Image (cartoon, rainbow, N blue to C red):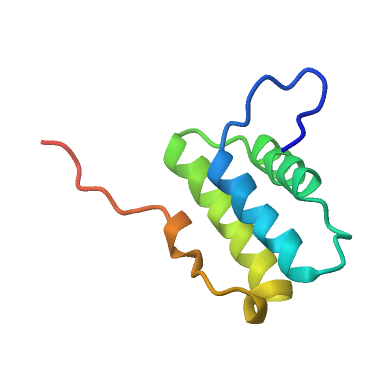
Length: 91
């Protein structure tokens, strides 16, 4: 996992791992995992989510579209591990 200059840590390491899996299953390596990660983070920044749950939903939706359009038949693992879980409101 190569980080660009100025990037101290990956905010979502599991997301990068998932993107690295996508990179491996394509066999072409045209889509670099770090580039895809940065693109998803740019989508999140543009959307300006108000909560962590909204941010996670944007990531999930983007990853879902990416995988179902290009990679779904190639993947063994379901995307469900990245789905935002519904939470009960605290009373």
